[in-house]
Amino acid sequence: MNHQNQHKVFRKLGMVEGDLERAEYRAEQGESKSRHLEEELKTVCSSSKSLEAQAEKYSLKEDRYEEEIRNLSNKLKEAESRAEAGERTVSRLERTIDSQEGSLTAARNANMELQATLDQTMEELNSC
Image (cartoon, rainbow, N blue to C red; front, side, top):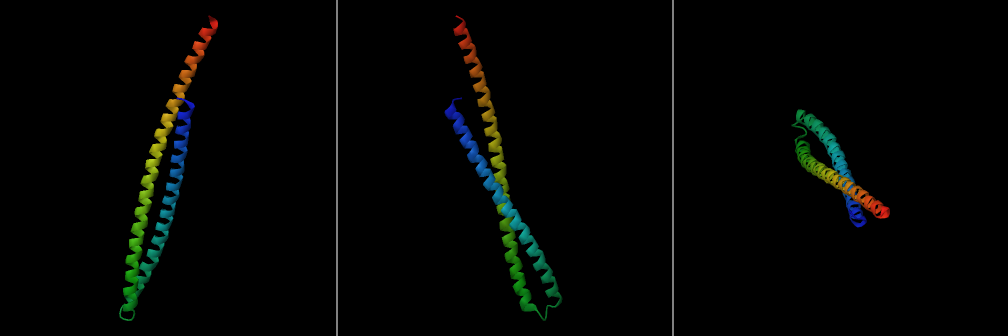
């Protein structure tokens, strides 16, 4: 493998690693938001139970909280979907990196073999 191909492999590996870092960051953000929304949802659910005990007095507030719970549940589902998508992306990028590392190792081995052959040929030419 020549220097240009090695450079391409290293550049592609760098790009894939950058993509992986960004995907991991997005996944962490999604997971953080999901945890935050889960905590918010627990708080809202607790409030909702309290309101149900006083249904006659607070029926209008209860309706508003139920709507908020639905909205938060939808947001939670969206956040979980984004986190799952991020995890899939991370997994795909990890497989790509593993593949690229394998290709790089094979290229290095081939380069060492070529270098050894070249060295041997040079020795043979010099001994003549």
